Length: 471
Image (tube, rainbow, N blue to C red):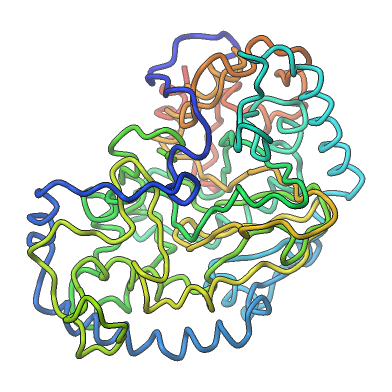
């Protein structure tokens, strides 16, 4: 499987991470077509009024707890403890907040070597990019690099400490249908970019958002099933299970082929630190409130204030909104964004908390439905640097993406979900298959076929179908 082949996906236009975030471009959210009014009416049932009341009631103490405890709510575990087995309390905290920091999975010296390797790689190829302007954001002083195929990224994606952590994270999921075509014991590689954010930067200001689609959450039939209990009305929202993989497998998060939009099922987003970075130093911010926040976000488009000029958050001051196509914070071809105006009950100014300090080699993960952001300004003294590496399980659809990702990797092109162009195809010293030393790593990159292993969710039939897709 090491021959180039031809990708089945249309390459996306050249660009940067800014293409999918209005918070980076200061764009207004585009007005949605009238068909979204009809979509609201199709999804609506009168029981949603009670759901809305219950969710708003539950949010009050939850918001107060997050505002009070702040970063202390973000679980932190050591890699050694993770391998030995975590307590039920630790597991509960991880699943409730949807976030976790794993310390010590990569030696500090190795993570710092990765960063220096990337700097050397970028410097060596500065004159090999179109227009001599290195691709990334912001264009005048790049902090988020459109680099996907460096040797350091290949080594990190196949590093045992990361792979084992991903296996643990995927084990927190389950399949409500035992026949679901997924192996939660088999993480695969999803190429993403990297960040080396310099002190003083105030341009990489990613506001609160949730990846994995915007209007797709309501429009796609598969995602309607993912969030089905929330949309059923009454107290059914409490039965929403964010860790059930079954309905996610067939969901389509990218209906509009948007640049930077993740088109696969990515159970956990994540990054691995290459710097010592703490609060106020350009780090990640999260809303450590998984299920309740999801319920609020899904119900929010169906309600509006009685008085548009009122700031009241009381249930009695909000009424159903079924006659407009408005889905607050949603745009076609963008990510789902949130702010104090679009989602006021979350009180994001108080509840978006910076993660605690991390050191080189520490890993940070957040559930695919968690609201997250990046601090608006880097006030620290050193760089804030990360490799974006998520936890992704093997599915048929994910295997199809892996095939095209492999083709792009071998050609030095950007991964299929990301801005296109010639990428690193003309770069010297880019990563290659030679950096992948293990059989498991080669399978994660779809360079070798998978072998049946029923104990790890790889039945003969499922494995054969995966391998057929990878060819």
